[in-house]
Structures are given as structure tokens and as C-alpha cells.
Image 1: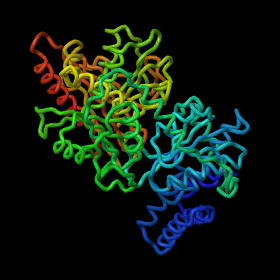
Image 2 (image 1 turned 60 degrees about the horizontal axis):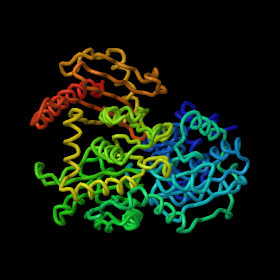
Image 3 (image 1 turned 90 degrees about the vertical axis):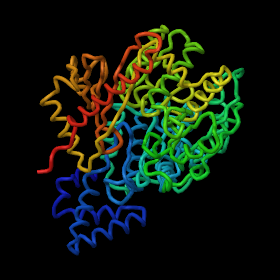
Length: 570
């Protein structure tokens, strides 16, 4: 009998909770989390109400395995990230893979978060004991190195132990299939079903040795490949400042720039070395306010041409540019702005016939307009690179959350290293011409209209609040937003425009504004994405058009903040 069938959230919510906790602790192979759980049980038995609430949350079912794999807070219990949960996940993955390959070949990577090394080795032990071939990458490395290694080595699947840009207390378990792309339905539900069939950790065979640890040759192969993203005969005169935000990207980015013929970037020294506590940032996400404060302070001291930031597993890329019109003299480009800049560079270089570009439904519609203008095929996908990377004949894909796939034949996922190289190439070309990245944005907006984007999130402590907000929007859909009539209201859960069903709502307004509301796939928050489009009516109208778009965007944001506000407390 599986753990799930014996201990559903309903049965563990009452008198069986302590018994379930003791059973889990007895099966936990990690003495640290075992002791943690036993301490909570002791407090519960002593009448500690806070400990009881904590224990109830830890036993609110097994941590859910989905298209993002696993992600959650580290700690003891089935609803946390720990060795017991990871061993079950590895066993479920192997069982799924063995339906197609009796001896599956799995390559495993990890970042430098707490327990990432243990989770990677546990996965290798499960794969090896099941008769498969397990290969570990040589130390903590960026996620795109793992995505590259899957196809380079011909593996059946890949596992990356990372929580990407999540807070320090989290970790995660990201699964790729043999084509080098992330899992999508129905693979996620099939793996999840196999996980629920695992009765206990004790029932999962684990080898004590027998897996392989790769040498630096896999990193060298990745570096050789991504260095080829930039042309051999383009300018390289560019000074770059880089921060890895305490993640694993520093050494790889330094080597990639040198391999491609650029000067090695200057470092933000306080953030260059991997540190699972992420001590200088509240959230290790380049999108978050304040995350790049140290980098921008360094930039004001050293005056580089470009600031480039990666998130902790280096699959995302952020860029800041000098801008005398803003306070502090530096402006962080929005994800959509960097997305269309990369696309414009690739379009100018030439898109092979039959290849196409893609972005997610929450990203700007400017890429579609650029593709139409240049005769390049374009496709819109659901959010996430598990969808973008599967676009047939993909040449380039991006999503507004700083994710860019500039070389899908190498890495079929977002890759913050190759994206950094490509934007550096464009910046160096423009520098040689006496132009900047902002000049290219001006050109695009003048030709195709100002596409202004914004987003905000509603963070929740009770996940049910997200469902309540979505239910309220569905039961009383808005007929106008910020004074503009709603011309189209789509429930994405029903499937629309040929896209698979997904939880979310999309509104198009009479004035061409667009709003999308959807729950985050990795964090406890509801996300609201906004876009306003303003045409440029003639020479000299660009600043005014931007002002109109900004004003419109602010009005829509204010209206949506009210429509998505949390329910009042009873």
C-alpha cells in the first residue's frame, strides 16, 4: 500500500497526525530531518498549538509533483523538500522511464543550495540500483549546462536539483526528458502517479556506489557550443559588469565570455561566490526590487557599458544599461525589452527559412508584430519554457520573466549564459556604430508602436485565497477596466486559440490594452500581467507616446489591483 493511500490529508488532520509523523520519521534516512520531526512531535504532545499547526502543514499530503517537478521549503515531512521526498521522486521517475527503457540513462545536475548535493546523490543511487546509468555533473553548475548535457550525452532524462530564484529556505527538483526539454503533460502526471505508489523510502533500493561523476569535459563542451552563438567577425570592445547573485553562474559566465573573445566581465565581488544563504539580497531574483542594488552601485563606480545579472541557477538573464534620464543613471531593462532586443538582433542576422520565433502569452505582443513585419513565423505558447522549447522549428523563444532561448539546438530551455553573450554582441556592435540598446528600442517603438508592459503579484499565505480571487473574477467578469470596455474575456482554463487549457484569465480592451491573471507555478502568489500599446503618430511623437502608454498602464494597474484584492477577513 502506498504512503498516499494510507495517509491522505483528511486522515492525518486528526488523531492520526502524530502517528503518521512517527511513521514518517522512522522511514526518514536523514538524521537531521528525522530529529527535526521528532522534536515537533514532542512539542505537539506537550500541547504546543503552534507545533500542531506546523505539523499539520508538513503532513498536508506529499509535495505535489507537476510540470515544474518539485519545489518547496526544506524541512522534515512529506510536504517539504527533503531526502525522503526526493528518493520517492527518483523512484517514481525511474519507474516511468523504465516503461520505455529498461536501463534508463539519467544525467543529474545541481546548484549550491542546501542539500542539493545530497538530493543529487540520492537520485544517482536510486537510478543505479534500478539498473540504470546515472551520471552526475562535476559540481554545482548552471541549469543550462544540465539541459545541454542531456542531448550532448544522449541521456533518456535529466534531473536538475535547484530552486532557481526562490528564497534561501527552498529547494527543488526539475525533470527533463531525453529531448532536453522540461516535462509536460501527461509525463508529469504519469511520474506523479508512480511516486504515489512508493510505499516507503525503505522499499526503494539505493546503491552505495556505481554512478559516474563527469569531469570538466562536459563544461568545456558547453562552453565551446555557447561561444559559437556569437559571430566570429563582430566587435568585442565592451566592458561588462556581472553578478551571479550568490548563485552558480559566475565561473561559467567568465569562461564563456573569454571563450567567445570578450574581456572577462568585472565581478560584483560580494555576490560572485555561491552562498545558499544569499546574504546580500532579500530575494535572489533579478526581477525583484533591490536585487541589483549592489551591481548598480558598482556600475556607478566603474562605468561599464553593460550590467548583466543571472539568477542563482543562471538560466535567467537580466540587463541594465546607462540612462542619464533616470535616477542613479542606470535602468534595468524589462524582460520584454530584452526579449525584443535579442529577437531584433537575430532577425537582422537572418532567420533560416522555416524557422520560427515564439513567446509566452504573458509576454509582449511586440515580438509578434516584429515577426509579421519581417516575414518570420511566430507562435504564442503557454507560460513556461516547457512549452516554448517545444515549438516546432524554434529559432528563438522568450518569456517576460527574463527567460531567453537563443540557441535551441544547443539548449532546449532558457539559458542565461548564451543570452548574456548574444546581448553583449549586440551591444558591442552598436557601440562601434555610436548607438545603444536604447536606440534600438526607440526604433522598434517608432515603427511598431510603444508596447509598454508591467506586472504585479498578490502574495498569499493561504493558497485558497488565489482560488477565491479567480472565482470572483469568473462569477462577475469586468465589462470595463480603467474606462475602456472589455472586448474579449477568455477563460484560459477552457483552452483558447489552440492552446492547451491552463488556469488563467485574459482580457482584451477596446484601446488594445491586455490583461492576464494567473497563479504562479512556483510561488504562492497570483500574477497580473499588463500591456498597453500606443502608436507613434509621427516624427517627435515617441516621448509623448511613451507618456500616454505609461499613463494608460498605470490606470489599468490601479483598476486590476482593486479587482484582484484579497478577500476581506471575516
